[in-house]
Length: 311
Length: 323
Image (spheres, rainbow over the protein chains, first blue to last red):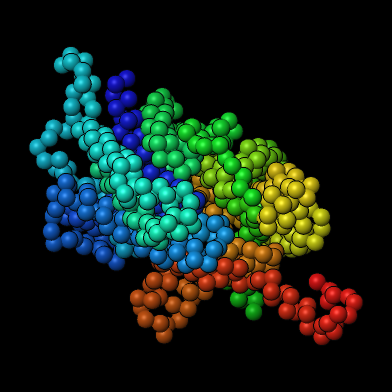
């Protein structure tokens, strides 16, 4: 029971971090960035590369390896920063040109889908579709699992899961502090509330949109790295599936609601952890069943504001 | 010429089927609704055909599977998909915005997980050896079924644009609130547009199952939805011809690139990239297309210029040039 709760919390907190990346962009632009799943994948590959991982024999970079091998505590933030920079690039190339023209949101959505397809297949072209595992010794001398039970009735929880929970908590606290208590956060909230007015009041909205994309990409990169460290990098497509689940998380929490993304992530993570083993094949459908239920019962999500129709 | 058709039979039929499938995405888009469920209904239709033609449900004489039974399967698949579309569409389409896209993504994923886990679909392995209605190794004979389906769907859609229902769709696309105020029921029409598309996708799926000969959970994925979207947006999302053209070009593109890269004259790396990097090119086209060509290749302006060819009536004279 405790084991399932901790596993659920671990995966749920990664969902939360990942979904926050969607939410930040949505709260400012009102658009879902479908390339977020691809950035998640990229983050994992970046960290793998920085850890000194070797690529397989398929793809353009066959058998490639970086000259340096960084420890995990450095590779994780650095890989995520790189993912954040990719987020910035995506904003410049796929979002900004359309925004300046005042294009239909549907078009922006499609161009972000295009970016997702582009990145995913570029990865496959460069490093092939193999599964990559992080080196086993990334946590140094820490034991593989921690026993939460007694010696007679062991309740082992993998150290990875505990690390994930710890990292997630730190990031969530930092993000909450930034958004609620700094000038930057205040400006960010102002842009999210009304970009035009914020611009008139002297906030450089363009810069804040860029920073939001950086933050969103960073969060995606952290989430990708954490999942990869817990399971593996299951090929270039592994972020797509995760990205789709992230959509269920933000709908459940309420589109554009930051606490909602956290709550939604934890709920879906726990729900998946409690799927009975004999139905484990259906585990991947749980998030989407929840999405449907939310659309039926409470479309604005758990913590969402009432849907206002602006004319 | 006959040799061309014999060697490219599979491609020609694939292009026809892709064009019809693109129309199935265009229909909800007429009402401004982005649906990524096309591959889901396509997969569902295919499973219906694959299961029904396993020899236990219908019996037939001879080696070839009777064409009327294929038609029956297509009709049935269309009907089942339409019913499923109502069930999926009603909760999502009460809401404005991107909820339909999200709900359809959920639908496709749930369908994929279920088809991987239940027995009737053959699990992860899928269904093999779906019977063939034609004895034609090039598969070109399938054009007898795929061709009329495309022409029928195209005529239906083009006609729809001119009648009351289609105009209601377009009114909702342009401004849902205004359409609502004009007495158009947005939810009803949006569900109708979505259902029509789903039925069409199901019919294409049923035919494709025979055409491809095997069917599995890889047939209806999120990726396939993106490819469809590329067809429609590159071709042009404002008229029925656009999706058809886009689907034909983009389906033929990899094969053309492959043959072009084989004929030599291209640098080796470029030829290799054209073969392996097809989806990279798709993704790039989607981004560039939305940025530089937001209306696609075929735009309404193209038609207007043609129609306005006869000299316009003098200013102030009665009678606008016919639209």
